[in-house]
Length: 332
View 1 (tube, rainbow, N blue to C red):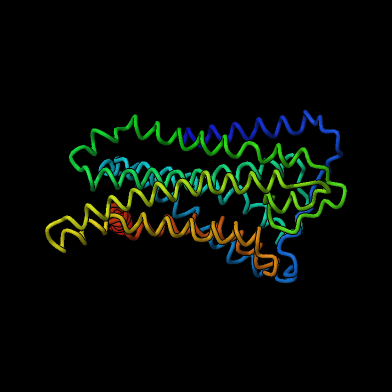
View 2: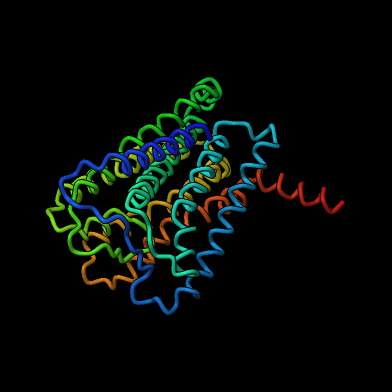
């Protein structure tokens, strides 16, 4: 929680700096207009229903995870600490965009302040990077637990878990910091209408009447240096994990050990598949209908926060068992 609050403070400072220190030689619009989902304006009310349901499930599920882990001392282990970090990040990720989306869909409130737009952009990239980093930390936990079980408790101590969480937050906050500054330096002399539901980096820079190659190159650098490296480290970890599993003497032992990784693997797929499709289609899917690109970008921000608590709630016996105990106790 404290690590996430650090990033929020950075965002508040960014908002202050953007609003009070406009030293650019180019005129920037005071506000942007978010169109929502272009071409589907008539269906905004209907589209808002599944969006709102997904947000409600994400909020309820992730708060439930946090509540159960806090209440149950047996869950105070590195794996569940990382699950809590992921829950907090999921809450922040969905909350950074969905309230504004719903205000567009329900109240036609399309305006967003220029500085607020840049701040939202910063938060989206920061929290997305944190989600990826936490999945790497979970892969490390699974690697140590399976490949070096006798050293698990001495290796992943509470202080080490805190340091890993802080490193994930710092990395994400620092790598996301150039985005608003790269966007702010550009002149916007064409239009201030963003054909999107939130201030997505590539959607904003496409409005600029200047060369945006630096922005595009940094976006690709960030994608491969952070997400790409995270996927690489996860792949290396699971290569070692599978090697250790296949060396177990019986198939029952192999299956039992592999089942401890299924929740993490599902969380990985829920995050990275929409992320890569959304990023590459936004840059290279010129023949894809724009409303499909916008919908897919929204799914990337809403689906993982909704699925993660379901995955860990259903697949993790400790959390599922504690949840059933709570409901049984209330009925009694």
